[in-house]
Length: 72
Image (cartoon, rainbow, N blue to C red; front, side, top):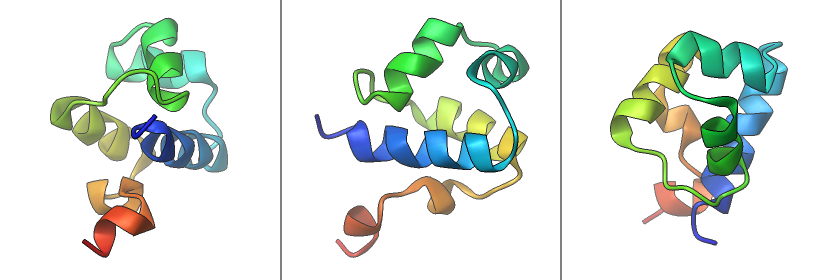
């Protein structure tokens, strides 16, 4: 799916910052299953969700953008 690259980057940053799925989901106010679906590329992350994730992980939304999309 097209959102899979977004999900992989979210997962990578989440792990890098030491968050479990449950901890991050609780912190940003979504269910673990919703976050898991985003990370697996099964659900499109909204801008609002991306903002919450980036804020909690102390990164920019641009850090989450897959390189292929940055080049377009």
